[in-house]
Amino acid sequence: MFRDHFRQFAAYNRWANARLYEAAMALPDELYRRKVGVFFGSLHGTLNHLLLTDRIWLRRLTGEGDHPNRLDVILFDDRRALARARAAEDARIIRVMDGYDDAAFAQTVDYATTSGKLQQQLRSDILSHLFNHETHHRGQAHACLSILTGAEPPTLDLLAFQRGVAAPDLAALANAT
Picture 1: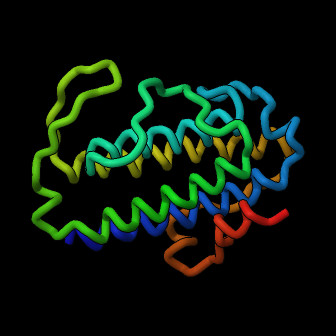
Picture 2: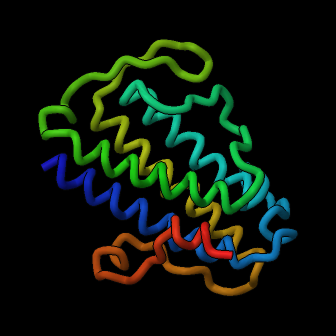
């Protein structure tokens, strides 16, 4: 049960990120980087934060990958490089979810926070947080797009994903010139 649930969220996560990045990549650089009052300042800051926190959580879960020590680090100044890294991280999240059996979700994970405090949580709770956190900040990025363009951004609803609404291949989009 847990496995199918989190595999669906991993696939949805990749789909929603691709749709969001497609809209972000279409913006002029000045708008993309404009401070609009969201927690990480701009659309660029918000998208960097999402990649950064996914890397932190995947490092905690797998012991592999980068582990930035601050939540506001700009990992990639270039948005195409950021999009390529996002596509790779989304593929990684899917691989990690595919590697878990149902019993793995009931296991406890020990980890240290960015401030060094030791914590212990169920893997299922960590993953619930990871995907909820993605949705929360994608909502902020979605608001950025509304503010910056005055137009309706692409739908990111889970139901749209479940109904088969298309999303671009983010890696191909990032590599387009």
